[in-house]
Image: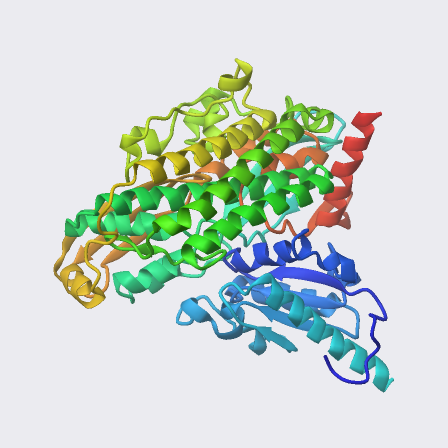
Length: 145
Length: 410
């Protein structure tokens, strides 16, 4: 964790999860992170139903052609300051689908990504770590104000 | 449906098209009259990753990796159905021990998937404490999966002509311990899902699929068994070593003596299948003969065999959601000539239409979830009424559903 940050979260991080054509693997690991074994809700991290309430965007999947506009719209709807986490190999690099004719991703091409989580799918621990990193970014932005 | 000549006007709710959970994203258009659904239209084919096309540029071993990524929840049955098809073409004999090992992994996947589904169904009616309870139980099944295969979700256990990892005698105590935990928690689940008042209220008489409709629309898996159709690939056309194990179709009349085809019956079928799967794993571990686990351990040699193979083959498997079907054509080439995948949700989408007709808007989540469609996000919904557009989010739908539960509790 970066130096000079407060020990506790200044605010509870609310996360919006957007699936841009992934295989479900990352998505169930994200929900697993919310459930009792990993239980991120004890840190105040929780999934919300609409991007307008969110601080962090978790995005999975390789972004198919039909999803591009929707991903952009979701990103624009999140109020500033915001952080974007790309979960899973296919969003980061295209992974096994890299040569497919119907992909526009990686997600970097479409919206700016702050934290990349690799793994197919990444373990829940890795996803929690990524959210903590995104929190560092948000706190740093706050400190600059 | 014919439009009735009344003063009442129906309005439409489009849901989707973003339903990227499975290979088949889906868009619904609901005709709503007040609170009742009059008509439903389903359109498919929005999110498309071109997996079959990509597969025609990969060799069969590489396709196993690709097929695993068709769906993260069915990450075992897709590559396995593909290898069943390829084995049939190339005439590869699978060793006996591998056939039993394959059953263990297939049934373990069924347990993970059904328990996951049970949690989602609880969430859809606003029973979130049960969601957390079931997912805690699911972690036990995932731990066992990780112990046996090395991964939690994508298992990478499939190999053409066998499996990649063996179960050694020193692993048995750990497996038995996990199975015991699962068995004990099954009792807890059964009590909650089948005896709890809230579940009964929301699921009985809701989303009915009659036997005729199930047959007519070719529903498959637990969805069709809950309507009383005895259809299960494991019994009808035994693959692996299922022919050696004696077990029966799970239909709701086993427990209640009658078949209604509603959401409650689908819950019964899935819960009983979890129990059946635990028993099947235990029996196949007991009966497992000694021997090889893969027919050809050298991958280069296997690829050379497949390069010479010619012909077409099909692989059918009973995935957790129903029958998964792979068609492969090899043409003495490094890459397959053709590869076609049909996932079970494809057959289970059309039955949504008779299920949803006449239901309330608040019932959409639970009825849609009752076929287990991997519905990870229902995204936004727009209600058009008198040309004033307002949005109904998934959250809003969920709130409606929770409210209905509360209303019924009073």
